Length: 368
Ligand SMILES: *Cc1c(COP(=O)(O)O)cnc(C)c1O
Image (cartoon, rainbow, N blue to C red; front, top):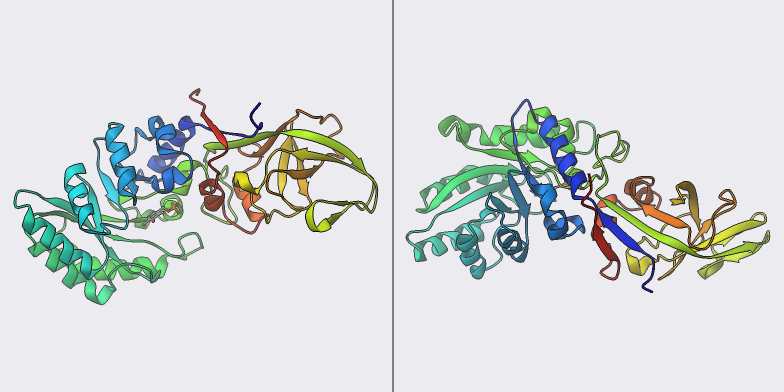
């Protein structure tokens, strides 16, 4: 028998969460790029594909993923968030009709020569501005000139204006960046009023109505994770798209003073009942999970005790008297928000979703 650990993915939750983005941006009437990078934040693009139907476009950065979604029949726009990495990518961009981000001068030059070689082709682009993240994007003082250069290249179609916020999850955290973006694009908007703008990630989609513009780019919220440290996904009206389940494979009684697991991190303060769960860090469970990390046994909440090992972890069953070998364990999902597990382990839900290991069997739950 295979190990009892299994992830269940619900495309229906994705559809619900995209609808949540639709409602949040209703006033602006924004179109939605569902961000499906990193194989849909670990959920599997193919597995969730049916849940993406209402999105207006898909955003990603791997050209193989773009090819995959075209192969699956996606005929709406696709946005490549980091643009082209090399010359071959321009051929893919033409072939697959992709919208490509342009974030530095070398990409403008490469785009110009790619278009010069293909006289009959054109390509839509998004011009990225650096508003404080300081990773990629043109600085505001260079942005207008970059826009003018793109306008002058024959074959460049629509030019969208974009930025990505460093702090949209904090109260007023995006104010400065948004003001800088607005000031910088003002001359472009005055001259070309129909130019599209796109700046909002999940946090801004949920909270910043003045940043919704023409398109938004929700990522984590699409999967039912909260972009905020202090607001839960449920409070945001989101449903988790991934549940990670396993089973108890052993139960033992220990005495006060007995230690559990590697490094004897946890020492029992009293007699305790301990359950061993078939899940470890080689499945993608965070090794840094503390004793505050919640876990549900047959729907009853308890917590991790001792260090997580490669293939097993241990839980406190003292207050779950009916738990037994074979009891169902939820590591995260509907009872245990992934964000709570992440917070108790010093990370974020994004990382846990993306880290789900290849050895975990995954099934799609296509019920409502
Ligand atoms: C990943 C990403 C997003 C989505 O961010 P979330 O916080 O997951 O909503 C949006 N825009 C860009 C450029 C990204 O790289």
